[in-house]
Length: 315
Image 1 (cartoon, rainbow, N blue to C red):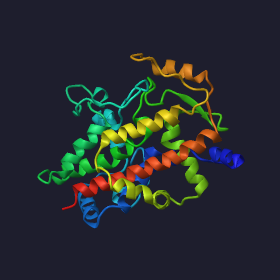
Image 2: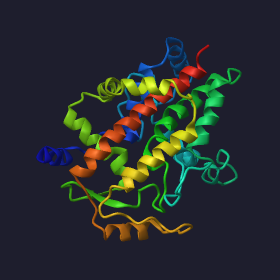
Image 3: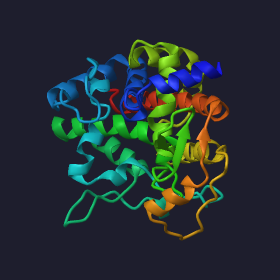
Image 4: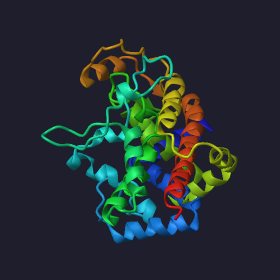
């Protein structure tokens, strides 16, 4: 098994699969499988009434035919131009020891204006665009844009390193070595793409639709459980993902990265240098614990996206 894992690491290009592209598509395919017929038709109507060009998608080329999956990463394509990167994550400090209201790290949502970047966080972005999608007095263009953001942001809030910060830009400034690969990656990229890439290659899945179908079967009982709970609770989702980041993404690293002091600020270059001296290697022990959690987070995101859209588009 160790030899197979090492081989997969060498063969799998880091950009082939990932939460950044295929992971978001997996979430979309899972959601599609659980949309009601009414919601599914309205999703397609809106996306076709106000289409966007995904043929030259910078981050995710070769979009699938399914309309939801095709636009799953559209929000990443426009984030730089619209300066709304803050809507994709929430920086809950790693030093926080108990759950509380997320307001200190999630200012009221506001688009970029007056030379300033957009304000807000992924949790209030989900609530904001859910409200727009639900408002049938809005234009199809407004509602379609809100839908595209929701498809993406519900995925983002379930990526653990989109919900925590340790002065490291959600793990982007933490170099780690993945198995036998001599080139360093970073903790965020590991959870965004590298671990998922290995699993999909080892499982010989034909595409993201096939992988989503496998997750749907595997987590069927989870869908039933989530169906009985509140449909739209982004704050709870954020804390849930944050817990995965604390327990696993950071908690199982060896050597451990000590949390940054409260209120401390470290330049990314400095953080990268200090963490680099630890020579953290991600091997089988870490990967075998992390991958099932990544799979469960993808399933949660897809199921919750479906439940959210069903509740909004039921008429």
